[in-house]
Length: 422
Image (cartoon, one colour):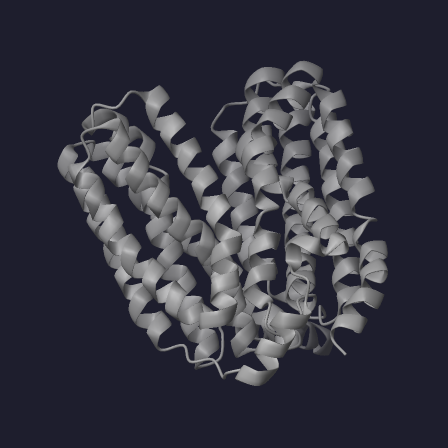
């Protein structure tokens, strides 16, 4: 009896600690988390319905919608580093406020799009604001917090992002079910309102200044992120490891339809399972990331989990009876790998930049996402569809091999960073 009571007490303590970790403390941590929740809910509502609505009610063909969004994505990535450099001089907060304010207007502007040119212009401006917002938020986060706390708050933001996006995507299902032009306008107005709320929240985030003399001295002395070879290598490695996103959104659906006989609806089950696990595990698994070395070790652990996950996805093609259980276990391991990789990635991106260059470095680090967004879908299609289980094994080898690289890259870059910071 005593053992059972003790076991129940321990479970309660674990649940209480998990909830305490997941819910941020009052002040800037909570504001940032609410900001992420609101912004991601608006994005989930819009992004999961925009392609369908745009092709129905703007008169633009599906091909041109895809082409326009691809062009917009290029403009967004091209603007990230220059805006990061500007943020290091002006502060990330003013640029972030301006970006959210612009988005509030731009999303409503879609209501009046009638030509392909107008669509590309608006989509490109939205892409610039949205793509730059991620490194700007990271730079603002780093200005507000330090040490282990910065990774903890970032983990809380990540959990809030997944929750908000899932809620927005669910709401978009209702809009798509209605399927009218009015439903599309409601989606746009709600998303614009979400961006306006983000403006209000961001205005209340007041980071302490670094000190103008120290910041200017660091900016004059430092070579810049694009000349930091070790950091660029870490950016590329991280970009390839972030292919776990593309595995969820492209790799698994392609595998289901091309190499298994399971119902296509299983894809939704796996995606929801992975999303919920990320929400639940992201904060607890980010606790001890407080140095570059610990961050590199966590990235390596994440790569191992992702590699094992790929092997299980390969095994799921052995027969119909094995498909569903193997894919469920593989999804759990992939989500654990994603959580670990993300935590380690933040530790590196927050711990590496010298004083006065946080936004520039965050912008450069964000360029690694281009690997998953532009090359990821093509890589999934070229590995998994034609090669089946062998493609999964090849992807697992990529994850496994790359997970070993952050640690030596961190060691290689330390002398140069130490010299520039003294």
